[in-house]
Image (tube, rainbow, N blue to C red):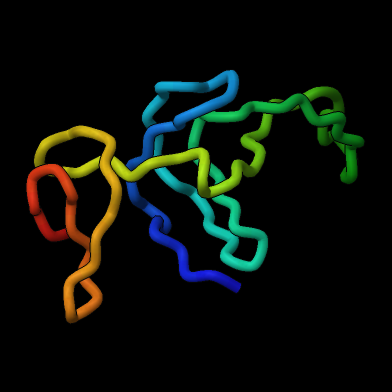
Length: 101
């Protein structure tokens, strides 16, 4: 299990795939699988069976997981995708502008 550089609620940019260049918010993080789920990115169609009386079934669109290496954190100060550094206290630091977040 590796330590993740992104947390739930962070803004990230997708580096590769069909959603390349899209910015979105991280919904969920899975350190065991080294994957993240980003809002409105990597949309897949899922077949759903109605479970309760009156509940509709059919096709729904859901966000699927991405490998964490395919996303890069966006700095809240400069607004650019950047690599992440660490300070002594464990705070994350933007490599481009030096802002702590």
